Image: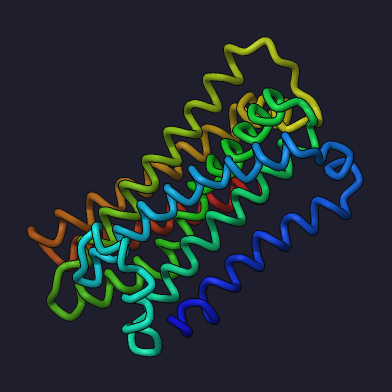
Length: 259
């Protein structure tokens, strides 16, 4: 258990302590630090960790374990440390959950009002995740696209897990968030402003930007579908279609960033 505690558990605990220290030295947050708010913030950590453990379970399945093996996580990390990338993946998943929790808690504490803090935190993450459509495209360009072309040119089909998980599943989640932000912005009486909710409303009302992000999201899904089923007909035509889709993605992304 020494490796698990020293290399994995202690850094995660330090990350939680880091957030708490950051709240103490930030005036708007420090003003609202009291026993009740601190209790609420650390209670909020539980759902973030539960979501992280869900993804840890999926990661374990990719390495031949079952989701129930999450209970044996310390033992598995001890056995695979230095031999597999699994411990690093698990550490990154839980670490990301704590980072997102810290950001969410920051907004809640800075607002002072638990209800407005919760709504502001949701608004902040909704806007961030709506832009993750662009992040999915970047993953496609840097990792999935070259890997798929290599497999096609060597007589194999593109990796199905890659194509299903990122261009389709994850992209559809972020697209749903984007659509939700757009609908809320159009049908809400809340004024656009400098607060987190106002910024989300302002973003959702930018018709051209939202339209471009939806176009990019559609191209991401199309990339996944073509990669999954096109190679069954013709690998060369599939490779050509993927190149065209990526070129269109780059054009749309250019308009988003510089347009």
